[in-house]
Image (cartoon, rainbow, N blue to C red):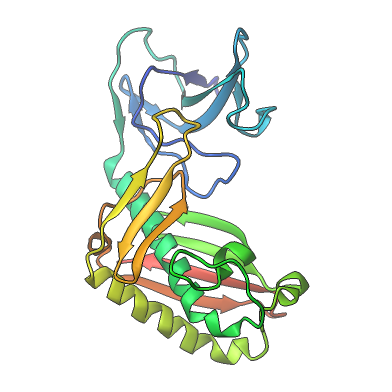
Length: 253
C-alpha cells in the first residue's frame, strides 16, 4: 500500500469518525477531485506541529491548549490551494437515516421494556426507564440501519431489570417497538440538532418533537430532518444463547 496523506481545511462538510464513540462511520466523497478514503478526528497542541489521530490522541476532547480538527485521508497529495469538497450525499443520507432510526428504536425499546424494572433508574426523555443507556455496550450506525448490543448481566439485574421470561416475550416486545415506530413515522415529527458552536468540540444535541413530547439526546452524528423521511423502520431483537446479550437490528425501508 502506498503512502496516504491527511489534509486539514478551514471548513469542511465531512463528518469524521469519532474514536471516543465510533458509532457512525466517516463520510466518503472527494477533496480536490481525490477520493477521501477515510475521515478521522485529529488534535494538535497549541504551538505544536504533530497532529495526533483518532485513538492516538493523548488528551480528552475539549482539553485547554489543544485544537481539534477533521483530517481528510487520501491516497495522493491534495493541491495546496482552494479546493472543492464533495460528500457522497447518498451515503450520508443512508447513514443519517440509520442514526435517526437508531435513536427512535432505542426510545421505543425503552417503552416496551418499561414493565420489566423493579427499581427506579434514570428515565429517558419520554419518562420511561432508560434501558438503552443503562445496558448498551456497543452501537453501530449502518447505511439505512443500525445494530445495538445490550448487556443483560448481573449488574443490570442488580439495578432492577427482570430478565426472566425475556426470550418468550421477545416477539411481543419487538411488536410493541415496531408499532410505536409506525406511529412516530406517521406523525411526521421534526428532527433537529442544537449546537452551541461550529467547533468540533461543541456539544451537539439531537432533538425530536414526538407526539408524547420533545426528546433531547446528546449526539454528534448526522440525521434526517423529519421522521416521515424514514419511510419505514423495522426492529428485530435477538437474544444470545446464554441470555447475556440482547441485540437490536434496525432496518430503514
